[in-house]
Length: 514
Picture 1 (cartoon, rainbow, N blue to C red):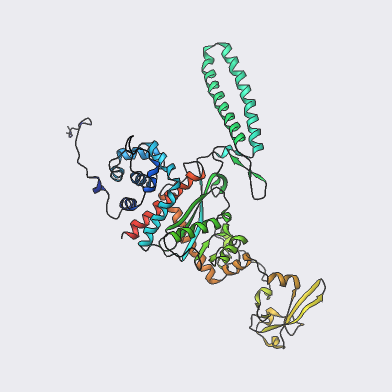
Picture 2: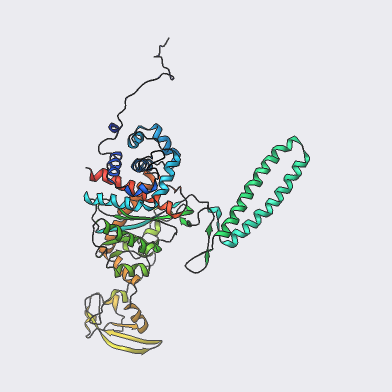
């Protein structure tokens, strides 16, 4: 017969633990501990009023350490963090044996509203001292995440009033049915009556909630001066389309330095349109870099890469005015890139070769001739010069500028089959006056398109995906940031900055302390 060692779950045992020995060298826990200890949190003392009387408070540094470690482990709820401080040795070590309750943790996060930016900048100063920043190439992007708000509670004021009317009508019907059940007095119907009473109470609360919202809030106005949808649970959030469907949440913006992917600026925005966020993020980046001693404010000469969602005339104009070397493509830039000419054949999920079609005779168009604006001349693909021969020549449907080659050297040119018709002996370019003026009066957007289409522009923009996308991947999948748990832009912004701090502290642990 088998023999087993006896065990007793009720026995007591005293296990000596030195908490500091559980914070290993080079770990994220050590980076959090040492960095937070160096932070100046004296500005938070005005949150406490226990100088003479009252219970001593838990040190803000302890709470900040615990919250940062929890976010690094994917723990967002304050009750989960409270439990970890009682059961997990690492949390005990960072908390110095303190066991803050969930109310204290949640209140501390809300109290960071006037201090989180100072903490973020202090960590950036540490990154700068450790030579983790270059500030020569910055990438901007956004991460759309749902917040603690119900998508079903969104609508214009007219839609919300209609919903309230429907609920009131349903409420009257339920109350009438509930009274009939009460009068019957049958025990079998008592359970149904109790359920009906709970349903009535729930709808009454919903109607009161709608009444309060419609009285206290005003309709939200969009850019087109038309009303956009409001939200009852969090009116500062917005409906946003994503690759996973429409969400009710915030657009978390971040600017990342290319050297070690340090986040230098971050903010949670309550709109889904990225092109509205470039200018405020540039201002925040300038302020942060100036605070850590990187330049005197302007971003002159800094390379900025951002995806096509940020491409519009105003954003590019702002970058040119501030002399930022920006690379922001339009939505069709891949259509013009030879490397992606066969991308459509992969859309059906099967790698099929394109069907052979009729071979068309290639001929040169206006886009194949390079224009020299200073000398007002065109240069053909063979290198010959077409000079201006007529500024305003009347033709069938308007006036044209005419450029032509001075001699008949086109006849002996190797490219004449692509350039000349059989009846002509030299090449002319006839450009409609309006088209010529439009071509030479490029908008900011057109200039950016020309810049992106160069070999250097495509190469520089290509660094963006390897610079900022891994940051969002780390926060969303490794750190478990799949939603915001707070309501209101101010609190959501605090939570987003805390997660960005976790990312930067991880970089300090991997590169700075090494």
